[in-house]
Image (cartoon, rainbow, N blue to C red; front, side, top):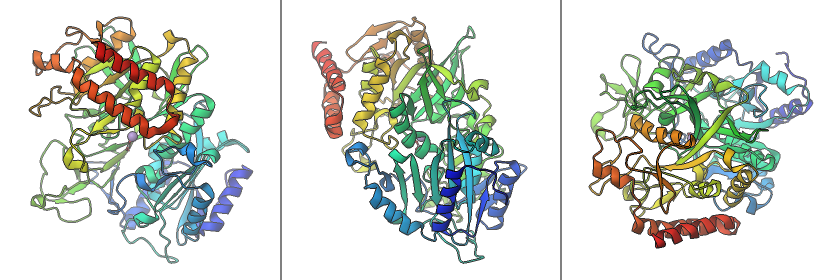
Length: 601
Ligand code: OXD
Ligand code: MN
């Protein structure tokens, strides 16, 4: 095959990797529909992909992964910065030379019997000055097909790269060499858990992934490049790479604003990005559901792009009620992984909104016994789908200039303590709110006392490529450089409050649009608010109460429980202490300020 590029550094790197990993052949990906179809046909022939019933799900395929390879592997994810301190206490660290030596041993000959694909891809629209080019070398056709959907792959990228353009080098292998002429024979290829490595070398902007073929471990443009490596580039260059959805909200007068929002995994980011508000006249459209790259432009306003090109969403729990737009999106041209299969060649999962329409094959390929107590779909079963199939995608979602962000939301699953919504007094108070994000865990889930908060600051704990304390300082610094009146307002939301009897106090989903409407009005200098020790909170009249929420419940979720918050202060202090001495003094001062306001209240 003719090599479509004359980039000496790229060609030398490909040659080095090929020498080490020993693939049977090398194939350059052009991102064409033909190439996508060829990958899927090949995997179908090998028994790795099941074509779904074209009358029900045209162009859709099902994959079943290995039970050891079903999710991101945080304890096998490494930030190998030159200096241990720079990775901080929340990341796994190994000295770069040591990690490279270990990985070189594993990579040695690991692509034997396979093709090495060269995937040139862009995160962000081609030609945007916020976008970045990556090149992934992989021995997985599943990765090639998914990268087609999740990023912009192909010749346009090679043109942008030219002969000496910058690129982020991403090396990936499933870690399962084949005998010459052999195939996987329908078995998902990967290495045992102890041999899986998701390694980042932040100073070199380099990613080496070995042993997993699944999701964020293998589709290296997503969490590895667009968050871990990009967060380091953003720190060095003065911008923000965040684990945030971006939505466009339009009010009944037809005016719109854009909101970015960070929530830990499994808090409904995709659902919020595609929300159907119950409030008459309001609409929400999607720009992105997982990652935002944000920069202050020359006029001092924060602009964001979605660097991705598709959605890699959790299937489990997605239904016509929880997310009708996602359900429409995944009707065609979708890759499903680890969902259950129906007898008529369709998909099914727990929480899809209707009972299994007959017998099912479970995510491991076995006949499913409904009495087994085991789920038919894996709880982390996924769909991969191009963003442009989303019926509520905003037309400007690929505008290279990005969209101007008016508000930033933080939130987590907090059944107690945290009210429905509060607004930060200013940017540094907002950074403080973001630094405290977390979800409460149940005793059953993690063998921890009920009510324990698992902190996930700004929802970046698994994704920040450097020290969390420096990351907070970076947030404080980028805000301090701007005119305060041009900065987005920062809010903390909590859709997950429960009463003492365990009832949900707030219905969530489309009703969250009422909170978004208040936030919208606040950004317009309207929206009634009162000052509380936590920040600015809506008055009882400011948010129209959904029919299903009684007056007392509404009062409860809009109040400050002083005793609970004094306990929360202690928990935040413990969380800050764990982050060590790089935690900015400004955040300690914010915590002291909160405590003082609570004591004075
Ligand atoms: C994701 C995650 O897959 O945050 O997006 O875990
Ligand atoms: Mn995510």
